Length: 264
Image (cartoon, rainbow, N blue to C red; front, side):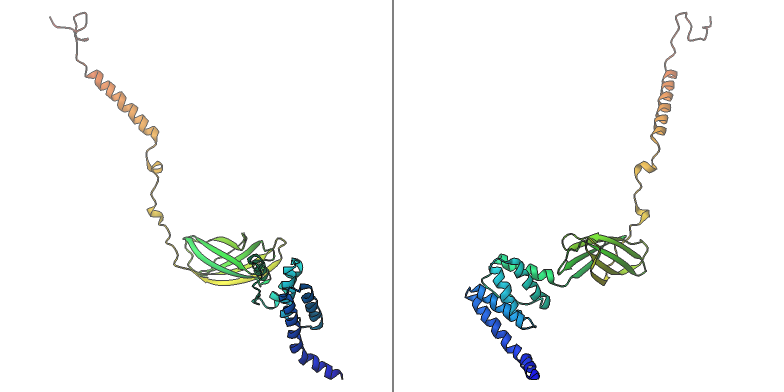
């Protein structure tokens, strides 16, 4: 007898479960929300598989009734089991549909998309964008390795929304055309929420500025101003002496021409 019951359970569930859920959905469409909830609760207790169609009726009914905690719990269970499960109900307002999509995104597995590019010859910019449920993520701890020449760096960058940007310095003479990036997503308590790694190819590295072509500032190569002042003073003094010596020789009041006596 027990074996017969077991067979009935195994082969009966696929037929009875959809029927119970369909009846509850019909009650929901007829706005008999309490009746629909009673039927889906009985079905979810009866069948260990907890059919998604019954869970959807439960979630929608609680949403329409404004019981968002219960609705969120049901939607989270649906999306954890089937992340792309379609929620088809034209009666939902755009704001409620957006709320449902936020719930879907919050339970989706966390993932990271990483890009890297040169800023200048000695500096790389690495951008990380997280997708899925953030679960209170606050920062990313990262480790980098360059290739073909090996150079290693590490650090932490804060998350701004879903994005974080790191700037990595690279030695001027290191050959780099790829960078290996490994990241760890952390919450404020330093719990590891997600780990990821990627190998990124880089565009051609910007040319290093030639130090020999750098223009030397005027101040560093010109003669000190004090020297020019001294030379000016000497030139002025010399001009005064020349002017004095060039004056015409006039007779003195005692009848002499300068200090040379006049011959009789």
